[in-house]
Image 1 (cartoon, rainbow, N blue to C red):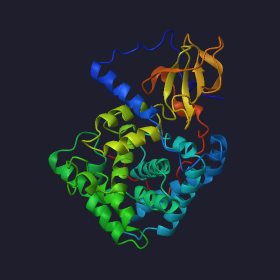
Image 2: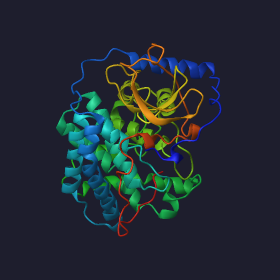
Image 3: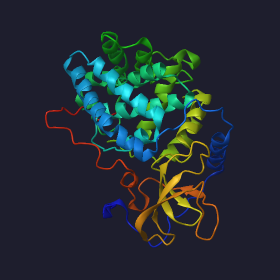
Length: 379
């Protein structure tokens, strides 16, 4: 059963905001990206979402505990458990290759008070999902996932009053914050068993395509392939997460924003590939269908990106359904025989809907035991 707190009914639909000409153009361009012909994918799903959730949930919990420990070890100056990290990443690689939607669901389990380590775990999952889409082999995925998992390890050397500051950093604080990159690279270079390409993710995830990033001001292809991937997935998780100093935006809005930032901040072709990977309606998106019903996207359709599976939550009159009903937009039709279509994506939190309540990952993440230290939230 879905808890009552998962939604709040309303007597009428949320008003449809008027889009500017520029916003309409971006919306059309992103749809064109989604509809571009794609080469035959290297990997195909071999499990359903529900099967893969069951398969990976224990390994995800272990990865969660391991990454918390790794970041605490870095804070205390202890040697990182590289073998444990490698095993955790290997389990995630295998899961992503079977069906990436399960671990993608886990990335939606976020809390405002969560720590840098869990941001890094989500970034690792996103990097692996993107790497699968790009057709990377298992060895490349292992290295990419390891680098993403540890990309922010240098933040454990940043003073807590700066790392946890709820407001904007002043110039002095920002300069100190930037040092998490070289400090992280130093930690990883002195940790046995970390491949150079994994260190590239930590070194370059704040570099930007036009050269305006930090620490080295690298530009274009000089950033490196893994560094560019790291920058894209790190940014995506950051802007879709609630943090002390801003509310996260909906995934759909984040992808449109990143499309606008292509060529300036990110490699244009890689951003377009990332949008294709995530889909115009990423898992967890709250959407209004052409029937007027409101639902949550629960599974991707990697053949037809505009036709995912959606769990219906509210009727067209915005009253709650007696029980959530999942429909496959590609194969099922409306009660009057029309094809289902998504009319629009709604803002995060509309109608009080908690998307995670409708995904098969609720209640799968344990509360850390008291002895596990909680590093600071990501900035």
